[in-house]
Amino acid sequence: MSVNEKIVADLVNNGIEFVTTVPCKQLAGVIDEIDRCDAIYHIPANKEDEGMGLCAGASMGGKRSAIIMQNTAIGVTINTLVTLIQYYHIPLPMLISYRGELGEPVACQVEMAVHTKALLAQLNIPTYHFHAAADVNELDTILKHCFMSKKPVAILTDASFWKGA
Image 1 (tube, one colour):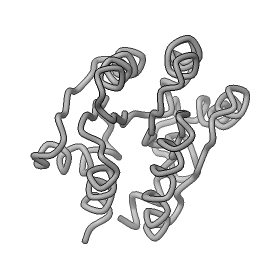
Image 2 (cartoon, helix red, strand yellow):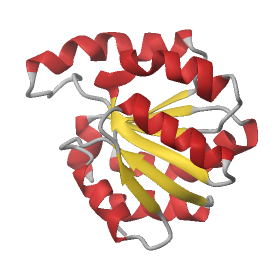
Image 3 (cartoon, rainbow, N blue to C red):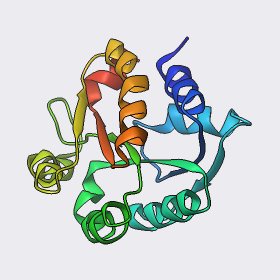
């Protein structure tokens, strides 16, 4: 099973029925896999905070949801994370491409990488960092913890993770 297939299988096995995504080259394979999955209703979003609003609505309607996005939008999502997701105890797995790390070919991505983990820590959001393809084996447990604790979690996936995938 490919890493993309494993990610989608773990989403489905944890009862996630709704996923919103914001395009990212690193995440293209997993987004394509979600599109092929009949068990997941997928709505692409224009912006990450908009996607979080869609996930909150799905959650309040009784559906487990997740968002797939880039770390470069963490700054834009802070208000939505705090005043909607955290305030209403919405469990939200966030699969995040961690752009700007070593090996990043796009220079402007580097600045947000410097701040991503600190911002997530400031918001008390549990954060996991996938470096190697084998790290995907932790996803099922992370998802279970997210829904049990009713908190958002961030799963950062860097360029070395996707190269190994």
